Image (cartoon, rainbow, N blue to C red; front, side, top):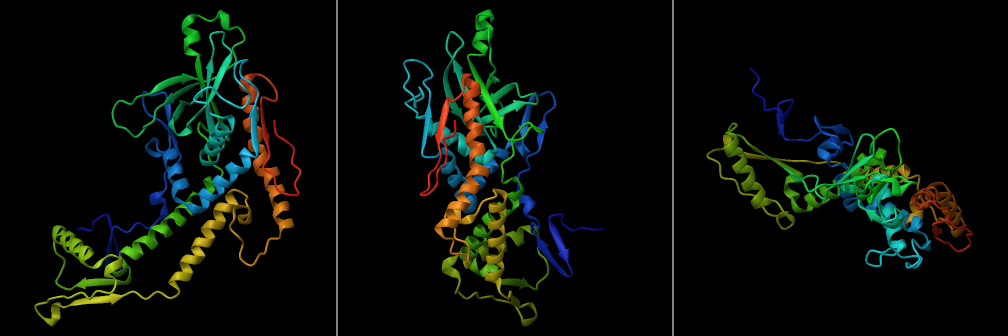
Length: 380
């Protein structure tokens, strides 16, 4: 009969407990599922994929550097918008004096993190577009058809959630023909823009490099743990008195961690009292050659994978390539190419979205991020 704990893995005569073998343990899947009897499509495992992406953005330095750099490029030097009505000056939205530049920056950030963005459109009594507001992509869910949206600021909350339902925005040429109920239902609606059409929710550009992001984050976590748990990372203590109960093993492990782990305990000496030599405690030290070089190589590989997913040159984001002086002429040429292939399409997508909502051409204008010696045209 096999009494091996399923959480333990046996190699040779050694038993290792709770060792996660794959980085996938930490990755949240973007799969889309519909619960029985529900209309809403869940976004990832436990409906938590956008929260996972936001956490990656906050905790992976390379990813954060690229996204914030791209947002600066997308927002450009200046953003202007036509007045939404006669009393509203160009360049400002109505809620709290929010500038259009601030709004576009939020939209661009969401696009870079999640692969899409959303806006709330508010109509006046005559059915005309009165206000356009940024809405956090992370809080929205939708049905498979994409014509109904559900807004909630805490999808992880158990039990009944505070959810607001919105219809998808659409042009209504004959507003006066609607009933009062229909007018109220369409007074506030959602524009949901995504980068893919084969699934309900978007995918970020770095979707293929999520594992590389995890590697970079885990390397940082490892180094923190290595500092705070120096002894554990360098030695294994073998207690040669047989295998006690799980309760006793947990108690011994907690005692050892409490007494000997931590940055201030790296040089302390452990004292072991044994009834005889046969039951003495052995300490086996790990010796790994070029340990630092391995992690350096792994870190560089994961960083390159992240930049590759964005089709970006590290030099454009203040991370010089080793052995490459990268003269000003090279920087300008690289930026021109990156701006033309990666930034302008996103600017165009944002401008087209405003044009479509407002029903006019040239509603939004973005003056491109300028470099000395470049001559980029405005996007509108």
